[in-house]
Length: 307
Image (cartoon, rainbow, N blue to C red; front, side, top):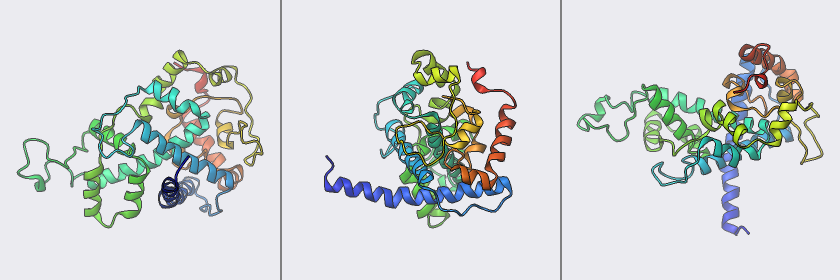
């Protein structure tokens, strides 16, 4: 049973980290949606279900960072248990329905876009050829990173994202100026501790291997194309299977256990699985989703062409 100090920590994390990030994320995604649809920005407060989806996605993303990423650890060099991509799927992602995994993926995309912009902003400041590192060569100076190298950049991006919500909150809300941003990132840019989400646990190959090695009832439901119609956002049964409207639209009202690789970031940028049906209707998001999905998959169904 949690003691008072632990309960205080839980409350502090929610009010100081999770709630501000949820508000910022909502503004960012709905702003992206307005740009894509060329319609007025949606300012309607989140419904209870929308808030539930978003808050649980943030907490689950943080849990994933703590389990498989750098997380709360101050250094990626600390010895950690190592999990392959399939194990991350079976241990963690399989706890959730596929659209709930996509909720987590939406938070990942949000963090990735933020850090990508930051990497662009600080690229020269942390480049080993910057004159400020004179005298620290020929070895790579401390605090220097080659963000022009695509492999190094992508790997550091993954590791830095995996530090979790505390750092994400810091770079969004606490940075005072460019110099502060540079020093903060020099202290926190991280190599990954092992496999993580994008291109790994969320990748096409990991999902294929998981289906081969650990087939699940959800996979069978997908093979049978079990009906999965939209049943509304306000559902009385908390244990039922109730996907958001956007999910049922792209999979045409039948069950899918695919996520990650099969959905493009351009769709996640506006938080497609977070919003209730009414918001999708009046913002033009349903039509946008149809266009973006067709641009990627055309008339094909990804479930028909699995590895």
